[in-house]
Image (cartoon, rainbow, N blue to C red):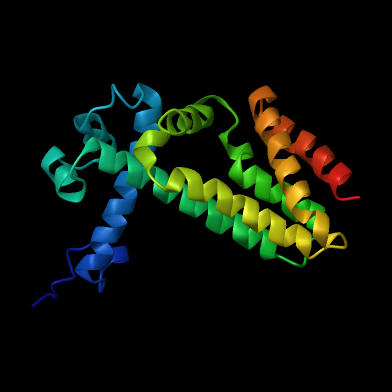
Length: 196
C-alpha cells in the first residue's frame, strides 16, 4: 500500500497542508504582479491571474476574496522579500560599506529598471491607495536599514541625512536609467561621494 504522500510532488511530500497552501499562495502572488504589470490594475481580471498562476478561478477566489486583496498581497510579498534581501546585504560585514549600500539599492530599485521590471514597479507606484500601510512602511523600513548601516560608520550623526540623500539620488537615477547596469554604475558614484 502506498503512502498518502506518494502522489504528491517531492517538494510537498511530508509537508503539512498549511505549508502546501502557503507555497501555492506564494506562487499565485508571483504570477499576479507580472499580470498586473502587463494589463494594468484596472484591466487585469481574476481570470487572467488564474490563468497565469495555473489555477482555477474558483481556486484563486478561495485564496483571495477580491482583486484588491490579491494585488495588496502580491505587492506586500514583493516588498517584504526586497526588504529581507536588503537587510541580508547590509548585514554582510565581510564586504565594504559602499559595496553593501550599492547592493541594497540594486535590490530595492535597480532590479526594477528595464521594460517589464519597470512595468511592475509602475503599477505598484500608481496604486498606493490600494496598498494600505505597506506603501508607507516599506520605504520607511528601507530608509531605516540604510540609516542603521551608515550609523555604524564614522559619521553617525549624519547617517539619516546621508540615507535620505542616497534615496533621492536613487529615485532620480531610476527614472533616468535605461538599464540596470547604468543605474548601478551611477549609484556607485553617488554612494562613493556620500560615504567619503
